Image 1 (cartoon, rainbow, N blue to C red):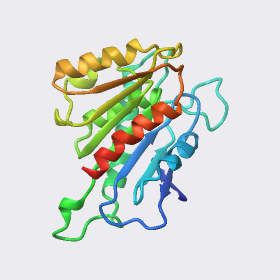
Image 2: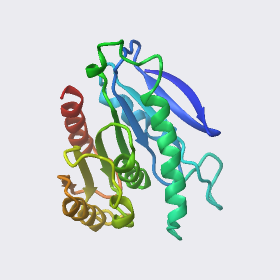
Image 3: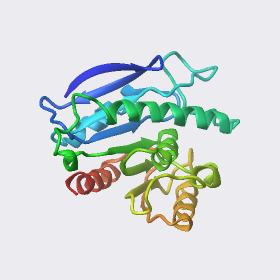
Length: 228
């Protein structure tokens, strides 16, 4: 895949493009976890082998004290300051606006039905933000994937959610996860269902990680969304 870098509000966004990318091509926004950056999940994206898909991997906007350079966070997990969630979510909206309205990838007049909205996918803190951003973005979101994530404040996330109730949502989590216990995804699933959504939770015998089996589940889910 072809690598490029786009600055948005001073933050780096790694962009992975296939050799040929056509107007209306799917955009998969991929969000990293705590203490790393957009480069971290690039190998995972390249494993999917989705012809024509663009992957966008933004660096989170926060740098927490005690972490090395180029190690970022979407929020401070020790304080859970809601203002930080909101700022990171607004930043994600800027990223989503930029790539959903890329003038080079807009469908030709009369071909708008071929447009593929953004898919939001993330791991750990990125999984949290995939739910925060994907559910509340005012534009079109084709699907949401949260790997080893959770929903810190379901009411804040869901009370003004913009995503239609039929938006495909996949939650993936390890039953041996000691960093983010699986109860986080189970509670998120319950909150989503109570709000009117129809999430799917897939549990795997793994720790706080992405395995071949869990990745295969995500790949299958995304293939159905892209083809649909």
